[in-house]
Image 1: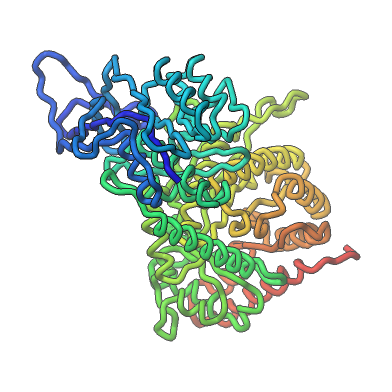
Image 2 (image 1 turned 60 degrees about the vertical axis):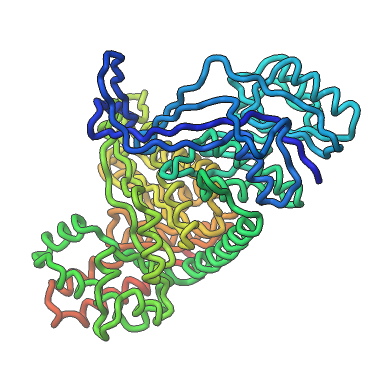
Length: 608
């Protein structure tokens, strides 16, 4: 297999600007803006780095795949740049200075026949170039692959697109090839037909999105040539872009190793997810954050210190036959690092009981900075999440949880023209994107994600409104999870039941809750999903169990269904304990009674 690359040699000159000294402002999107004054003002930079790129990056990838490739008119002994490109970076943000008139790319027919002509992204397409390529293809059996930039797309480029066997583009094309395949490559997304793969390039190694585009395109090309499926080709391309540096891309053997390792992880994720939602048992949510447990203890008159928090969680973990009723337990960071009575950490202690340890990884709610949406919230915690997940995995956690909260408010309450004011479309989409990024980070770390978009059980709204809002959120969530390439077979949904808000004049009956919840879940949850677990969300202990029973009665469902309760399991135990370990056995008995009742509610009762 011989390949001729058509493209320009680019010399990139990187300047890493010092934002501490220069005059920077940050806009509402977090993008830094620099005041460059052309009046002799000095601006500082940390470092200056130069590297040859363009068609040479493409050649590098071909070589790593072991393919016989060369650049048209290129002399390996003399790296002469066709174009200089100056790149200024500030943190993860970059800007380019490029020449107005760039050197036209020359096509020199090869002395020996080639199987493919690969028109690189760096190519400056001219009429002469198009004529040369078309004439060569007309006289040979060579196939054509081309990277098209929509910014420089014109009628002459269409002539090559029409005859191409494989087209890469950085946007939608007006004209499609007559016989070939089109792959769209964006800053964080690759799409080929119905297959979409998200990827994220770190700027810390000076890898720019323009360079990553080339790496992605050539890796897809080489992977497809080697017999990989489209899905595998896109996966390998994302891996290469995410792990490449300016000086080196990954070899085909290393790419294959990483791909196989991810497949093994996916198998493990499916097994873990299946274990967490196995029939007849639920999940204990013992992950109250510092603020939540402080409020709970304060209301009960219990001192909120580390010792009491440990003793409180210890009551649940040491309840007799706990593993008969729960498959997994969600821990708070502090709890995961605390010790059981036998001296082992709680994560190890639970694992030995056959209970899967999980971990809460979100860092609470924050108001949106945009004044228009300042009354709505998003969940923070993505910064440094991969590193934290790696630590939790080493500690023994095998699943995680992330909560997004949506409060329902209405316009026109009491009139015939009621509209939903919040959650807004903006808040839904932003929170779903955060949930999807969290889920993908979890799966990359070998951890099963529980995604929890909660419609808060509060406010004044009907059960019909609850159903509408929940449906809108679930619709957006699963579209976004798909966009981020989250494997649903290794992902669990934790959701609210469908019921009217606490302040609504007509409260929902368990029968209504069961019917509405079953309807919405069937309509919006994909069959591939590993399972659905319910939060109790401010319901009373008895109310949550009765509603769970009615949801079960409306089964069976395409996926396992169970509970992931906190307060609805713990409240009677807390009341019995009162912060005094002399009451620990009484508290355990109260907790066990709620476990039994909710596990019983997972069995269909046709007489109810």
